Length: 113
Image (cartoon, rainbow, N blue to C red):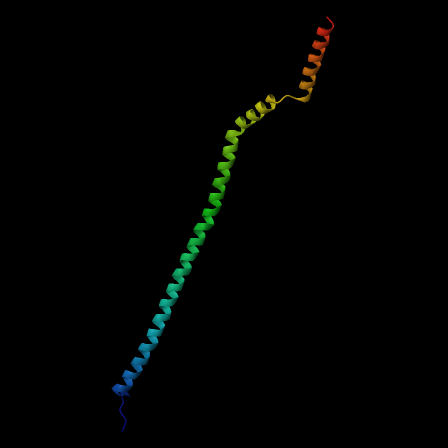
């Protein structure tokens, strides 16, 4: 004679063994998930740092270029004026030749008197 409810009974030891094996598998999965989360967090931090530096370096480069250009634009008139003054300070070959010719002419005129 068979029962109609078809209930299956297992021993407590068998149940505990199966539960322990399931707990071990879940522990392994939990450790794996924790490791993956840790690795993803590190990768996320690295990506975030890369993006920050990716924006920072071009911004700093542009700022330095603008500062240098602004510096030269601001000082360009002063530099141009200084270079003109330096050119005016030096006597040209033609000016020296004229001075020498004038001095010789005056000297010859004074000798002739």
